[in-house]
Image (cartoon, rainbow, N blue to C red; front, side, top):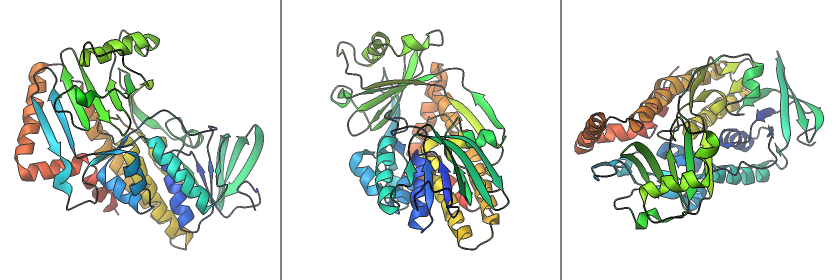
Length: 403
């Protein structure tokens, strides 16, 4: 029986083969549950996209044997900072204070593509053929005892049946739209750009950490160091059109503001994206469940999006496995309550505050924010609490405690 056999109904269908969909698929497959993953693209997205894994996320991925692989493919960043670029005034946070709470007291800077590739390998070893590329889902529906997915697979209309469906198909989720669920929130007025370059900034800029948020004269920018490159992020001027914003001339000019006279810089990627804050009204409708960006979107400031999605996947698959083995499916309502709360009360609020703080233009307000962070660092108890919050440790525990 192949993954696409329409007579096979005893399975979970997952739409979307990003980090969330693949982690969910791998966990279910390891529990002995048949899965089929439908991915519209023909290959994993090559763009770097998210690159920050927080400590509790790497701890969870250790359970699948993925944590060690990602650490080898990425770069641990034990310290991160806010810094006034021209003066060097800074607040440096040390994740080492979390060593008693985690096996990974650092931010792991590793492109999410690495998670997709490694999880795909593991899923193929567990259930060969479970991941289907070039599978564009066109409609989803459900009955009292199952789900139905219509898709075009390599251009051929196909109908699949299953017992449960997980929509992990991102911000433009077909699954969410077919359920008719509201996805309320806002789109931030400014776009953001992410530049990838192998230029060795660490050899030219004093005091760089693995993760840096800079306030500079007339703008602000971030710099994250992965294993093979630096990722520089900023919001271009609002009056600059998209094509100009990602042009080589404009990108080179921006990087030259950081290090005058050191260009031209080799550019691996220059990606422009809109920033949203949105939350689905509910994450479960009958036999269909939503996770990750299909359910909630937030500013990437702080690196919470992918992490929150992976937390969704672990929470959901814990409960779905128990339901599969005979427990009451009310467990899945608890999943929806827990992760909806995490998205609304923790992830979105904190990432929104981070987004606005980093884009603050008023020098007095910048200095006040920097002083507050320096005061936190100087107080051991406050620093410990702050690092737990900013690493999603407390968010994960609060959500899991909800009945």
